[in-house]
Amino acid sequence: MARSTIRDPRGSLAARLGQSSVAARIEGEMRVTAAELADSVAEARLKVAAVRYKVEDEVRSTADKLMSRVSDAKAKFGDDARFLKSWIDDPLRTGSVTPSSPFLARRMASFVDPDQPGPVIEIGPGTGPVTEALIERGIDEARLILVEYSPEFCKLLRERFPRATIIEGDAYALSTTLAGHLPEKATAIVSSLPLFTRPPAVRSALVKDAFTLVVPGAPFIQFTYSVVSPVPRKGSGLKAFVSDWVLRNIPPARVWVYRRAT
Ligand SMILES: C[S@@+](CC[C@H](N)C(=O)[O-])C[C@H]1O[C@@H](n2cnc3c(N)ncnc32)[C@H](O)[C@@H]1O
Image (tube, rainbow, N blue to C red; front, side, top):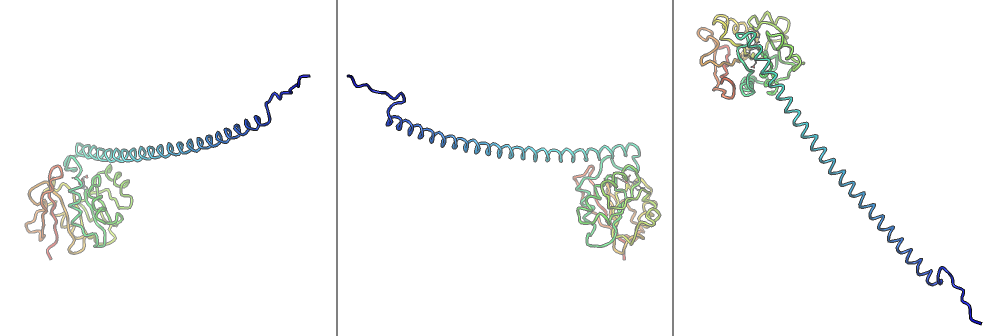
């Protein structure tokens, strides 16, 4: 009788064992590959996030810079437009078609000693370029007393310099205008008034009145586009100093500094 062979459909034990160890190896390798793949994906995601963060950061900072330039330009052109309108409304009172440049404003402020205590009076501040230069020089805003005739400019000055004292009034009647607002004698007077639109006697009277409001030795600082002193000097008893021309201003201007001769 022929020997019958019972065949295991799944193959011999050895074969089965061989197959399962190959399968286990393959499975193990697949697990490692899957884990490595997951790591690589996570790493790539982190890199993408870092790049996105950097790009977003750069876009944000460029946008901030642009916005600040736009608002600077808006403020500058806004002031130019306000000034021009004020000049069209009243050319003799405004005295100029544009605000003073920062160069002229700084030159004026340079004659005020920030270490001298006491109020600093500014007359004819307009949109505030000289005020800004005084603060930049180290004079605390709260020490500033600004006398401006135009209600529109006063409104703007109150917004820009909330800690300063803003008085809407006539600087040609200085003692009267400042009555009750000057806690002690001032340490300097800085004037941008268009003095040449007034007769010499009115200018002399203004300066004489101004010197009653300041401590001895205090300067009265005034800019002018003219080649001659805007304050009549003959018989005034004033010492005067004049700066060189500030060319970076339209038109070029000089700064006069007057003091009472002792
Ligand atoms: C030539 S602008 C100078 C403005 C600003 N300080 C500048 O430098 O750009 C003269 C300023 O004096 C003001 N002003 C003219 N007459 C005035 C007066 N009697 N009292 C007070 N302010 C006066 C004008 O309204 C104007 O703001």
